[in-house]
Length: 534
RNA sequence: GGGCCUGUAGCUCAACGGUUAGAGCAGAGCGCUCAUAACGCUUUGGUUGGGGGUUCAAAUCCCUCCGGGCCUACCA
Image 1 (cartoon, protein in one colour):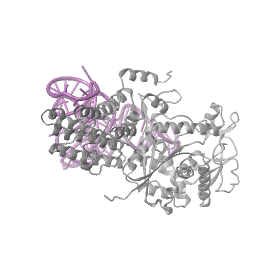
Image 2 (cartoon, helix red, strand yellow):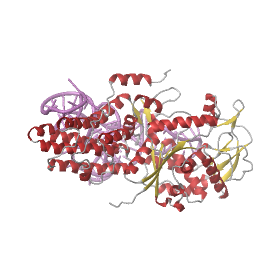
Image 3 (cartoon, chains in turn red, green):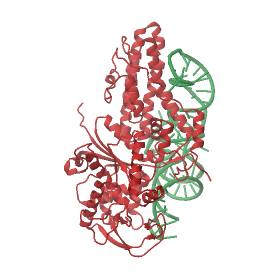
Image 4 (cartoon, chains in turn blue, cyan):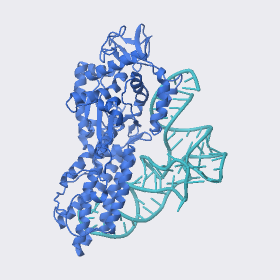
């Protein structure tokens, strides 16, 4: 009773525009972010969950050229493709924006102007590689070399090193992966390096100081890594402009209502330096009261069957392919229950088949099946009345309470794998109870007792649907529908929670909740996604 | 080359200085028959990568060697 509604701002690292992402990308940011967002909503908290496509930079230009399309057109199409796939995985963004939006353009220019006014931008004259063939400058990773007379702006992160370091040092509860990467960059070599924030490209945010031109920087755009994180903020503006809300600043401006917001970011480890140093430098350097991140959850990589996922080799499973094969819940469950939190993890088809069949089909799905079908055959498709609960039922409620409280703790702490393991243990309680209560036996001598036992077990289905919804939202919705129940309030009191479906309440035996993956399918997929090997 | 992460039962992982190192899967045995040949119970299995050291006590701290990964680069 009366716990204050918390407010959670949640962002997932924004996926790059040039193609469909693979499962490793999904589990590294968007999927766990969605898990957390869904959990916080389920607890009755207020959530703003934002993601977008990262659209600027040379790789986008190259991909567009390859596709034979203007880059803006290409990005618009790919944004729609990614949005559709995200929806397929049930990623519950409040808004899925675009870093190429006018909102982000304005905001990026605004931040650059503020940083320049604060003396945090340094103009540098250095050399870059220019490709006459492509008509563009190439980033280091494409080619190493030099060419004369190219100036650019650099963000003086070095001037903010102490401020950033103190801030990082204060985050003692962050994952080691996050803080160790941040500290490495802070203290590496000569210390934190300044970073160029402009590039000589056509596709990007034009370099300006706010609304004003920037002498000497004509024809340049901001570096993609400068404008990409700013899109987190701009995305909230897009959310308003899309008619989904009315006030974005109460999520982002601590002087306009965001002081009680908890901001959590999700990302793969390759993104950590930009989120622990570059973006905070932008925020802090602006001198304006923007909301800084409170917690950064970072992930290691997911590998594929003994190697890395490879886009160029077609090795591994990509998001669109995954959904062609199986419903989103299967993937969500496996990926989240095997999230690469402490080290790199590996996807294998054997493990996927075994985990999904056991956890989803046998433990959860079959539990639902056995009790609903038992009830239908003995009492009809109605929660039976009669009988009372005794010590055995009280013990079940006690164990559920203990485990649900533990589950909540893991979810709040974003301990993804542990939360999944705890949820599974909660499902198991249902099977254990049925085995020991054995309503099929008690029914013979004492139908009233069997009715009471069945009533509890049926209520567990609804309870499980509520608890499981952050992991497997579609199955949860299906189960709620089968139980003909709208009440998805979080189970603060478990005794109350297992009394929600009263005697006489009608339900329907659902279809098989999770079918099993056959050996033939597993072998077929194993071959199909092995990639073109040399 | 440097830094960080990591190496625990066949497999995937917990335990992060303190009772006989735990769980799921797989294996073995038993039970149940409501159920997607599902479920439950019991059980086999580890000198915690190797070797030193600190401590009353180490998977857990230190040193070293070996293996895996990430980041970064001649510099701590």
